[in-house]
Amino acid sequence: MNTMTLLGKVFLLQFLIGVGFCMLMQDPKRNDTKGTYAACFRSQPQGNEPASPDCLKAFMAYAEDMKNIFHFTKEQINYLWSLERETQSLLHNHRRRKRQAVYLPVRKECRLLSELERQNLFYTVRSLKMDTSNPNEYDTLANLHRGAVQPHAHDGSNFLGWHRVYLMYYERALRRIRGDVTLCFWDTTMEFNLGMDNWEYTAVFSSDFFGNRRGQVITGPFRDWPLPPGLTESDYLYRNMTRGRGMPFDSRAASSIFYNPNTIIHSTITWEGFGFDTITNSQGQTRNITIEGEHNNVHNWVGGAMGFLDPAPQDPIFFFHHCYIDYVWERFREKMRRYFRDPTTDYPGHGNETLHDANYPMIGFEWYRNIDGYSDYFTQNVYRYESPTCQACYYSPYTVCGQGNQCIARMNYPGTEIEEGPQVPNGPVAAFSVAGGTMMMSASNGRGFIATSNSE
Image (cartoon, rainbow, N blue to C red; front, side):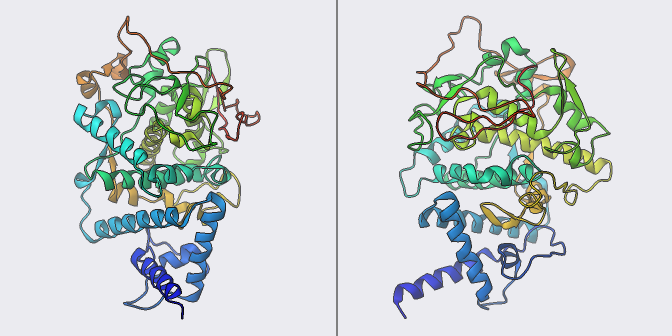
């Protein structure tokens, strides 16, 4: 037998055993057939018992899928597998000891981090991107959100769970570089409460935080951020915040998701669900409240790379925004429990009936099923959230405590020049359309998100 072939098989077997075949989540009764990704990852080989031929075939098919769908190299696939091994080890260790949430990393609102915490986090994000090793780890993770993901992880029930798993991988990659960093979330209801005329003047678009809001990003920790060739018209990260197109997360929607006793099942807040609660804007237009719809509006508001499916994760804002979406969902899940609903089994099945099916393998993470994203294991074993309080906002230099005990974003100080970067020639300006319209495309190859509204 060829030595390299033998070594390859040994490596694959080590990988399969090292992952532990992921006896994952609550271990409900499964309908997985032998040989599928999910069934193989959930098997528990005894001792040195070899993997079954069906499972070996399944994992080789997975590697082939990752190569064909995402155009990943062998090095990129191995990198993602290594993150999965670490993740499963983390989950396994937490399951073995008594659960005590106090020991879990705490995700906070970005403006409520200490100066040192924020600088460490932003520096680590930059280090992940600027690393010159093969593969570039930031770009590998960002590429998981490319076009093939659109029908699987958007416009339906799997949106919430897929992005929860995606964030977990990203955070694990950051913690490899610096073990004490934790993702923070950008709560854009704080911008919404400033009023439409002031949204763009929020202090987060400054050199201390995310950098400038228009044109190439030339200030802040994410300045001069190279984009992969051919992804957009620009070689560097750019934004295009424009008044009247997109909006921050509507605080009225957040309040309904958090507190309305009539919205206590996932079908009431997921895309293509029946959207129990509605919002009427100043023009008299009414829209259903869904978490994904409100999320889309923020992508459109920030614009630039954030406005399109393929390049969106290249803007680090993407992960802070999605961390808030995950926080909103967790608050909704807590409300469900107060009304004796189980969020782990309440999977609505909206969207593409096959790709968003509860038992369909999660694209890019085929060792999970879609419904695994609804498990409690993430917030019981990996991280927890801390809600912003007015007391904390009062002491932050970037927030104020407003009427009704609500945290509000602090604006850039009067007279401060708002810096803008070079504009992108012929670059796309928006990717969203009003619900019921068609999905707009960028001038190049970017896919957009459908928005629920483009005005207050």
